[in-house]
Structure formats: structure tokens, C-alpha cells
Image (spheres, rainbow, N blue to C red):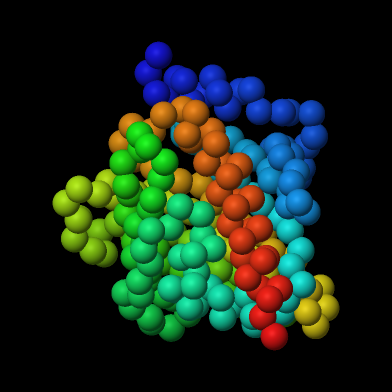
Length: 201
């Protein structure tokens, strides 16, 4: 069976019984983290939304995102992350992945645009800008990606964190791996970020 069809077949097995807003459905709950999945028009790949609460301030979480060496340690499947450019409210970051065999390593250029809301919430909009850097031999460039981080303060040292992402990984990705990624990526990322953030003074 072609990888795209296998992926669709596997995704249809995900639980549909619990619905979130719109067409989001609750697919997984683990250790205080809720993972919602949603289909994307004209794409075989679902988007995910992970939501949890972290006993840390928005400022602490921002610091952990902006320290790219540290950020790569808590971001799922990150092999390397480095700063390319900062201009106004936007930052461009180069990232390479370390995905399980048999997937090939990917790389991407991410634009991160920050937006501060009136209630203190920080939204970081993510998008791919593949042409901003020359293609690296041996790596598959991710060309389509959209997502966001939303950090909403609940108190002085408590934040609701939402991590949402949809990407086309490019090239052949086994269906079982794509299916696992949309749950593992938010769970592992948010669980590790929470552990790091809650140890900060």
C-alpha cells in the first residue's frame, strides 16, 4: 500500500468519541497533557494541538524558548537549532530533526513571529520559509509548516501552554511514524518543557 494511503488508513483508527472545538477531537490524554487532532484539507497529514498547565511564568517559558541550545533539548526530535536572523517581532531559526529509522533527517527554516495580547498572553506564530537558506545536501527540506505556541498566564507562576502544528514532512514517511508523531511530538515536547520550566527559580 502506498505510504499516503497507509497513513490515511492508520489515522482513521484514532479515537473519534470525544470532540473539542470545531473539528478538533481529543485523541490522547497523558500526565496532564491533552492532545487534539484535526484533519487538514488537501493534506494526508493531520495537525495536532497539545494543551497543558505549567507551574512557571510566561517569562520563564519565553527564556527557555529563546535559549536555542536548551530549546533543542526539550523539543521533540530536534537535532540542532540555531539562530539565523532577528528583525522586529520576527525571528528566523534553522532546525534539523532526528527522527526514528527509517525516516530520513529533515531540516527547516522557521519564521517565529511573536504577538502579545492584552491579557498578557504570548502567541508565537510558526511558519516555514524554505527558500531563506540554501538546501543542505543529505537533508530533506520541510517546505510546508504552520503552527503556534500560545502561553496564557493563569497566575504569577502558572501558565496554560498550547502547542499546535501542522506540517508536510516531504519525501516518503511511513504511515505508522506519521501517526505516532502527531501524538508523541506534543506529549514529549510539553512534558519535557514542563519538567525544565518547573525547576527554574
